[in-house]
Length: 445
Image 1 (cartoon, rainbow, N blue to C red):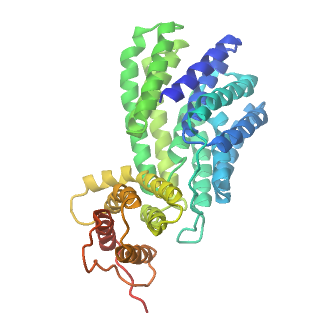
Image 2 (cartoon, rainbow, N blue to C red):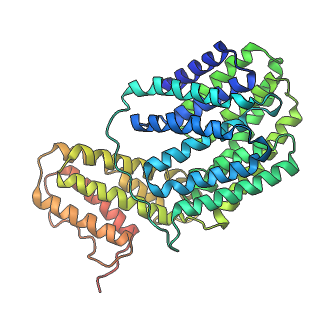
Image 3 (cartoon, helix red, strand yellow):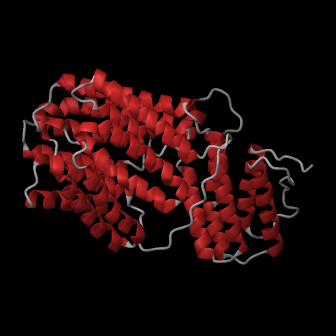
């Protein structure tokens, strides 16, 4: 959090120092925070990609205001579609959309216009200065190749279609229902659809976005009267709220949505737009954007949550098997930790569904818990004396569970004939037993 806020404050100070207008200053802060959050786990090559992609994108967008909807929809769709070409293409696509997104944050009466490129250069420079020395030059675990979903359509194609249709509808609804503040609906739709991992994830994110915005609107309504237009203390509070949003974001998306809504409300009050009716209109636009995003993700080439969980559990088990084989242990341990982290990104909606359901029994969230329970034992196995027979039995069970997850015929999970002396291996095998119960095997033909 500290590194992100240092970059944001340095960007803000630079924009003030060189005399950018208010719109460009706001865009500098928004882009610096967004870029710093996006690049928080980036290595040097990722920062070099940003150094190339962001300024080029910002320059290409100059003078496109008259056909902004078409440019936005096309850019967002292509940025997702190119994920099929690997992690570097995914990173480039994500970064290319940031100038578009931050342009929506700037209130229209103070739009920054041609200074977007300058704001972008400031953001790229200070994020790199703040993050690269912080140990971001390590080895990045290999990303799993993108695989086709059940109907043969790649997830990137599905998500690109969903995003393009959702944004097209959001632009239309925004201009018709909220002509003066259409950007709120479009921004929410983009946030809900971007990075959507499954139908359940989109529904969960959309609900948290709406609830967080409602909370932020209530808070903003309370504090709106405390500051007048151009009050410098409002700027101080905005940065404090941004710091809180950075700290709370990993804990829940809802907290982040509440903080950002409150910060934007203060920003509108700073420029003299603190009418309570405006806050209510913002909430309505956010809800409309969330509904549009959810509907598109559920109705247009949807990505089933169970398919995503199966794939990510299988990826984590593959990394765990490589770790147990003992070759290049540090790398495969990093691979496994990364796979567990990626699987954990699906936990929020699944745990919420498990808590809300009326009946008991196995649940997909149990699979995430089982894989996560292997993290500690996997590190211990890496340090402990090895038991070849026990390791071989655990590896055989990993293979059996992975075949079952992929609905492929093969041997079933077999409990170990003897417990063995290695407690870490026993804990891993116990987790495999729980996974085997969740994903029944298909007998070999």
